[in-house]
Length: 127
Image 1 (cartoon, rainbow, N blue to C red):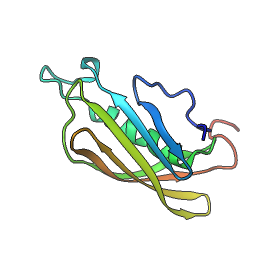
Image 2: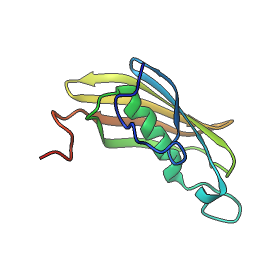
Image 3: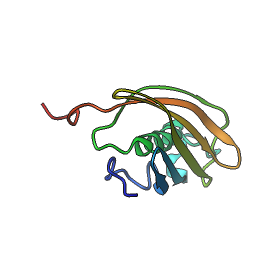
């Protein structure tokens, strides 16, 4: 299956697709020292969130999909050099609204929860 959304996402910033099937996606992000917020190598949570968000968007895999709500929690820190794997799985559909369960992990779970996606009739930047 080919990605139909977020085709220009940066592999270096949010990750690359490693598995994609109907209603499911897996994305992997290799972190580095440029993503760190301190001298100990703590990775900014935005990179972890971005990787999980990409997995959610690809699980839906519609060209117009957008995120309108997230209920996630960070469960462990990520250190520069660690690889984050994020998985998104559709768990509920109600019309154009889709709930995706997300989990991101290194050798431990680092983020988990739900992302709520919406599929508008046209791209959100089209008038």
